[in-house]
Length: 170
Image 1: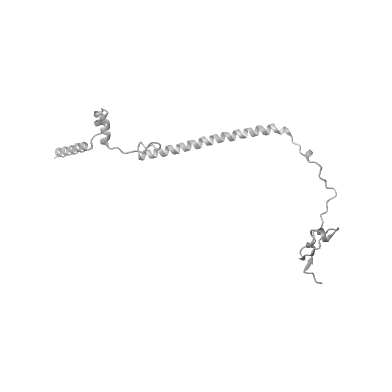
Image 2: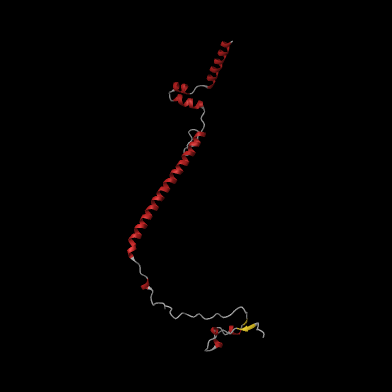
C-alpha cells in the first residue's frame, strides 16, 4: 500500500455543520497538505472524576491575618532607621576622605611652591629691590636691612675672612 503524499485538509474543527461552503475556512478545506508519518493527532485529555470545580468567587480564599501587621511595621521602621544611619555615616566618611585628599594635595603643592593656595590668585614673582622699596617707603628701613642681607656684601665678607685665614696660616 502506498501512503498518499498530498492530503486535502479535512479537519472537523474547520468545517461547520450548517453550511460548509459559506464557512470562513471553506477555502482551507481544499488546500493540499503534506502528510508526515511522524505526526499524529493527540489523544483527547481525560479529566479525573474527582476534580474540584472552580468557585464562583475567589474572595473567600483571600484571608489576611492582621495580627502580623504591627510586628512587620516595627521591623520595617527599624530597618529604615538603620539604612538612614548608614547613609549618614557613609556620606560623612566620603566627605572627610575627599577633604583629606584635598588637604594632602595642597600640602604637596605648598612643598613645591610655599605660599601656594589653589583658590587664591596665582603667585607672581617679586624682585627683592621692589620688596625693599615697599618696606622702606613704609618707614621701616632699619628692619628691612636687617631682614634682607645683601648677597654681594655677604660674599665679600666671606672672601675677606678666607684671605685673612690664609694669611694667618702662612
